[in-house]
Length: 240
Image (cartoon, rainbow, N blue to C red; front, side):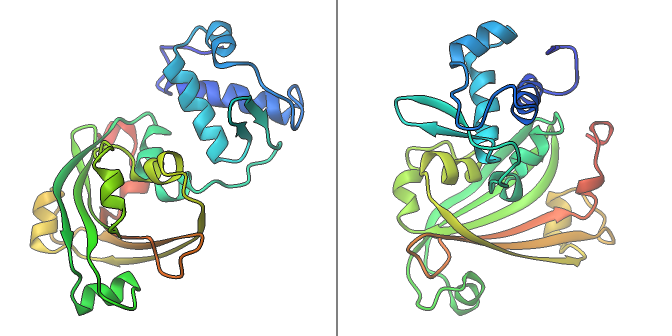
């Protein structure tokens, strides 16, 4: 049964309830699951809670949608969707933490030689640049620099850029991600990074670089340069 008094968000509780029905074969593979309205009534939750739970299960490969028909069981094992791998928002919400993002810069830039090399683009061309400070509750948690193919700017104008970029890529744009490359370097923060993240200069940070490739593109569609405290994955609610 779902409980509003648990620390775990309702949509996570509902997701686990549905996952149990799939894994136990209560709902068979390729069978249509109950409608959103039926799930709302059965579990006494709102539409937003149901949609969030179903969205996560689709991304994890347990469910799939047929446009205009409904939602169906894809399999009893996760096919490892990309969102849990590329979304800090997903990581925080799964732990009952409310994420908040502040847009610092939103512009079109032409990468210099060094940035071009980091982006893994062969030729310099204008790209859409987005800089954000990421927060967990009120704690500054990450400095995020995102570089997209310029066409993303047209889509960005219609999106809430304080929301999950991974979700925009996977659900709003419905881009088919074919490969994700990632490199993580442990180092000490610069003075600017230490100030923004409220860290001591002797505290370790992780510098994460990520390249996301989509179908029909040889070069990355999205390049991410991300600075985050090295202790993030050990954080609990008591730390926030």
